[in-house]
Image (cartoon, rainbow, N blue to C red):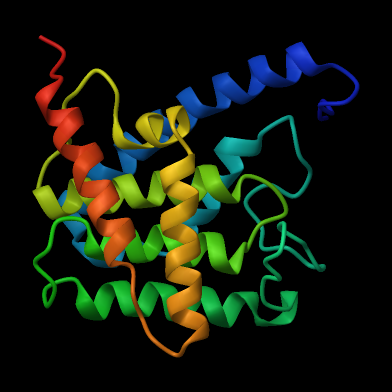
Length: 200
């Protein structure tokens, strides 16, 4: 059962907001599990669960990789047959670089950009990417981070610099380079804002 935005815009928005709350609760569980299991707990099953929570009752096939083409503005994501392999590579890069890269937001920035670039799901890719990014930010800090507004909420409030940083990473990738520094700097500024705005 699902609600389409064009049929009932107000109900759609309400369900979407409720889903974000459920996704955040699930994210808290994932973070707790990670503290006992290590970075290997970040896997496709975690991403599937985060996506399913994000799109419950507003999209079909939540929590499953897409089985057809998808178009995102001017970006053409990989062929759907390549999605499982691309996602395995994403997870592998994160695992292999977890202890190598000390920067607090560089690996999370990579995850945020790459999930958006692959666009592995039919719906909720941005929400899933932002949740995964925040998961990794908390893991880099070794704790669940406090603040009135967490990084994903701060991204949603002002998307223009977010989109610009994603585009910059896309352009670097097209040139044959791996570069998410602009996105990492953007996330670091949001994280500093979150930690400075503690809910006391």
